[in-house]
Image (cartoon, rainbow, N blue to C red; front, side, top):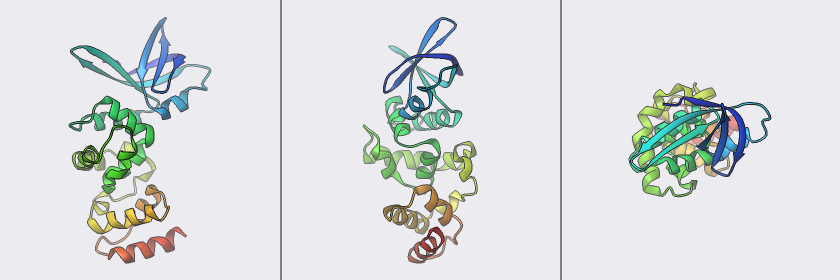
Length: 197
């Protein structure tokens, strides 16, 4: 297995990058966010990789951070989510947003990705909810969030309402996770609006 590739970026497109290592160009399928991070780098670039082997294909998938690679591996572990859908999802949300969306039950976040419908998005939330809450690396600076509280009906509804009101999912989740899970939804929203103002 190839853990990472390090070398000069010699070519890239919307969904791939070619990294030259020791005279060999490795084509890595990747996300828009990784392309954005590496395209201006003059020196060596490092991509953390996952190699997927099938009967008729061997493909390398590369990511700018280990967190993005971990999120990709989690996504592709879900039945019905292939590598292309995984890349598409990680092109519209970073690993922390992905983890928060799963933990808060926000399946709509994933339907923004090309080729991901509501059923697949709901399956991602259902299959990964327990796994993501244990992946502290993905949570990053959101490690103070109590994911068990966020998965309750009231907290999930309150977070959704705050997102509709224009607050980021991360801010809403951080605030709501600090409230008593038995607090009525309306009261959670009122307290969050006071705290976030």
